[in-house]
Length: 258
Length: 263
Image (cartoon, rainbow over all chains, first blue to last red; front, top):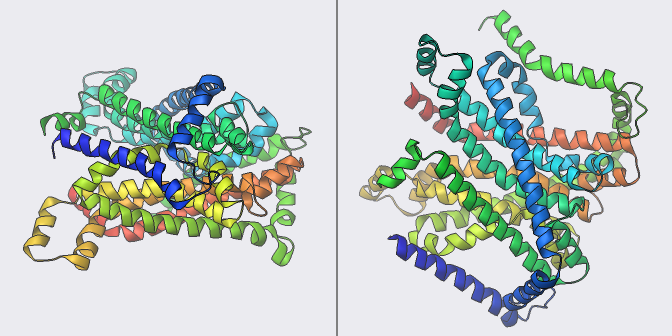
């Protein structure tokens, strides 16, 4: 299938879905507080964008997401490299990591509320906790993937530990690190919205709750749709980031050839 | 492996966790801080908080309903996700049509759906199961699609040449080739499902782990709240271990194959 045909079919799919959302509620006679037609969702959203606290909510959500991802990224990569570069450290910490990683970050919600309050800090705790493990585990796997021959060669040529990290480990681990960051980016968004919903830190999640408890069902749908669109943008940005960071890597070059 | 080596490994594995627990125990001993009660107190209130009371004990009245909803939600999500994934994965045209719509649905953070579903389905079990189903559906669906897409063309052609089709083809070729990807999807769905289970209960519920923990927080029953956090943590760890056992079973052929290719 050519790229153009695929694009056409994709657009057709989107349009078809939009039409379905518009017609189905009318056809089935669904009450507007169950599933309002798409046009009402969009007009409610448009009002909110013009007059409501929409943009500051989007800004707050993105701030929590970005800040949390950045902290988790830096921490995950540095700890991952430290553990990967010193095998003894990795062996000692392996069980602890395996134990801490599956702990659902929402378990920390009550603690975060009481100790850190309902502001940005609480949300950051959840976001960082959840996304840190994604980056860390991928980084450790990446460093473990370093070719021993390449490493020994570098050592034989007298490269110091720092130089080996820079020229041998970093390029090997980078694809893994970028994958970890990409996974962490969507997890961070989920947790940012969760924190806003459950803790009530400022952001789109809190607006969703406000709309729902105010009985503004079309707006609730609209805001949920916006979180989805933000998610799509996040995915696209992270994929582009992956492409740029790894433009030299085999996995990216194959796509060009075929 | 000789016994000394095994002992060395076990020590290595257990040293840090033990050290952390022991440091927590001593660092928190005699703690006056309301929010960080001594670990000793937490351990002391644990049995009466979760285990006491026979059929009314929280482990029966709260943990079991939570796990039941999680299991039901995950099963439904797996059935729908794998079924739709097989259909979409096998047809390039269907894939092209549905891809952008699926991209949007996948990108919606599932917790955002909780308030919507509360408005639609009330606060009963139905809502909580729906939240889990809708949230866990996408990772399973998309991974199944990827799995079906990456079927080895040689195997596919071989099947065609031998006239293998229908049920047999589905079982022997499609499901089997896609199973590593499907398991990846299920693993992602499991950790997401636990989060959604807890969140939906924190919102509105009459029972469940999330509900219990939030009640403890609101009544400032701090040691009890800590036991709740520990229960949730243990649950996450046990479920992921369980899943790994199942995965090792289901994918034993795959891991064997990979080993062969590497050596």
